[in-house]
Figure 1 (spheres, rainbow, N blue to C red):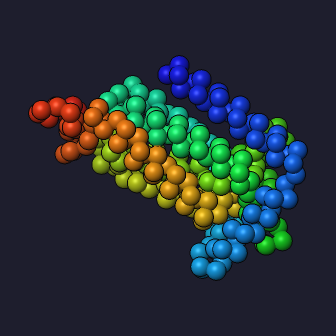
Figure 2: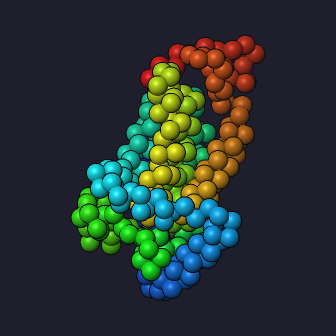
Length: 251
């Protein structure tokens, strides 16, 4: 895991440099991009963010839970599953790790080339930040966390992208059916949370899904001779062996 820790540190340094550069250049382009995204969504009828935001605010208890989920699950679930795969599903680790790291690296390029103000910054459009209005715990609820984060890094949404990665890991590798169901639901819940809390748009969530999906396909093809392919419940087979090898898949 030493290599992964170094990569995470490098990604954070790059992320911080992008944040500093955007703050120095000004945020006008980020707000311009936000209005472009909204105009495109409205033209095709997928601008559901405002309706979800208003519905969430009507249930303060749920909004507080959504704020906490947004602030914690993105990092905690992803890192926990990365460690779990490394320790308990090592045959899958290289391609899954490569997909996650490659998608994250490309996302950094997106943050640089297309800074995007989240909906919660567009109060003129009717969006309300539930963290602010409810004085709730959230990812940007303190001045310190807000200063450390690039709040214009919305395109692509890696909350959505990482959630897709996590969901795939659980669906493919978990042994218990209920864990697989949780894996399938996790990306759906994540997208509902990031839209209703006014942190992302439909299009940047879709971009996050597409980026991670393509990275997963590319990484699997790259490591396909060593990758293991789920077969029947409780079994996996390798495509490089002359006969299937069987390993238990219990969570």
